[in-house]
Amino acid sequence: MNRILVIQHKMIGDVLISSIICNNLKKAYPNAQIDYLVNDNTVDVLKGNPNIDSLIIFEKKHQNSTYELIKFALGLRKNKYDLVIDAYSKLQSWIIVLLCGGKRKISYKKIGRTFLYDDNIPYAENPSTNLGLAIERRLSLLTPLNLNFELDGQPKLFLDKSEKDFADKIFENHKVNKSKKTVMISLLGSEKLKTYPLQYMTEIIDFISYTYNVNILFNYFPKQLEEAKIVFNSCKKSTQQKIYFDLLGSNLREYIAIMNNCDLIIGNDGGAINLAKALNKPSFIIFSPWIEKKIWATFEDGKKHLSIHLNDITPNLINSKTEKELKENAIQLYEKLEPRFVIEKITPFLDSHLL
Image 1 (cartoon, rainbow, N blue to C red):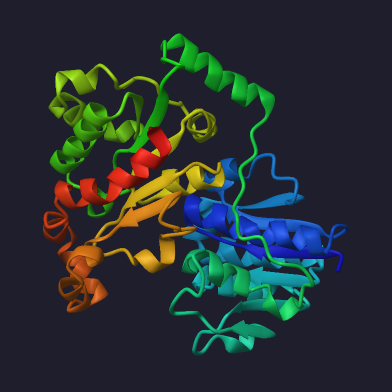
Image 2: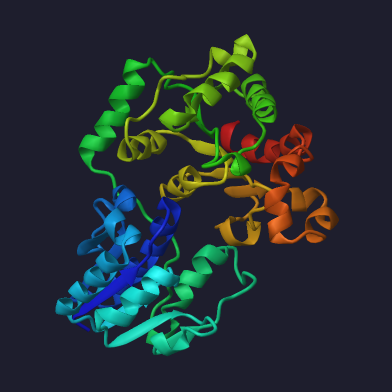
């Protein structure tokens, strides 16, 4: 095995989790070149990963032009891949797999697409471990290789000394009290349908502030500043005194470094949570009603990693609706996941990590 291509388009969390394929392949084939094909906005989560030899960047022009996509795919032929693993398995990656000339190709089994691949892996519907489907499905793509070791499902992030020094310095500049533990709040989701109601989140933050002697940081994108201010201004004055509102990174790597200096993360499902888990930080996720918890509740053990979903409270309400209906009614359904339910479930988690 001389050269291997792993394909994963889309979001930061997807790319980070699929990097476990690269990690295990490098262990199995230490002398092989591992190339990872990803979108240009996700490369920061892969910096420093010794298991990836080269990043192949899927740029916007490749996404927006069929001609550029075909040209890109044909250009991969020169690499003469012995193995191609398609962890994305949608139209754009199907075209790449069809044209890139890989000798052996592996992906998920999908009707009408099996001719593209030598190995078509059934898409698991339910998790068999606490790794969660997002990880189990990706590891399943390695089963045809019959690797003779236990697969590692833990995504990993790698920070260098300068990044760790940056985090220490920014904490020092903002006069963060080092004698207290620091809680990161994943304040807002990537969209409104994945964001716990702001008034509810305010109640959760006030509860944490009142109950525990901690520092509190907010994670949000610059475009979400106004919404973050709404939450901050809605918090009690005593809570505001514990929040370091302006302690933010200016880019993804700086966020990762800051998160590395925190003790745990709480909040909306999304990339921030996945990054924190890759740093081995305890997490508590509040899932949107339309997101399938069984996919993204990774490493859930009831202690270090925990989550809540409306399905935990009113399963009949969730199970009676289609995915489309859940998404269309997500905001209204969120209203039913009242803070009292979150506080009841989060308290033992916080007690074990903060007291």
